[in-house]
Length: 90
Image (tube, rainbow, N blue to C red; front, side):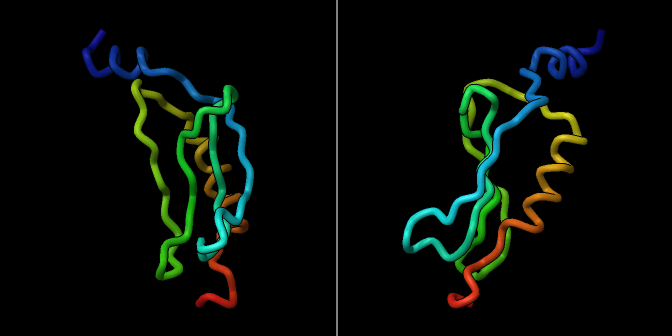
């Protein structure tokens, strides 16, 4: 087996996630979609920056992890609908 494939196979598989939409704190200019593994560990959030652009905010992890593309595509589809700047801020 190649070293790259070994690296991939050793990475923790995250094929199920928990998500919630939040407005963050009072000063946050939009909504966010928070993505965590089934144990509640934050993986990343899809957020709005100060210019109203959507970004993926990745959190540092102590271990590598991988996610099926289909799961990520479903997350992004939800984020396109749910994550937006507050209308009165932009």
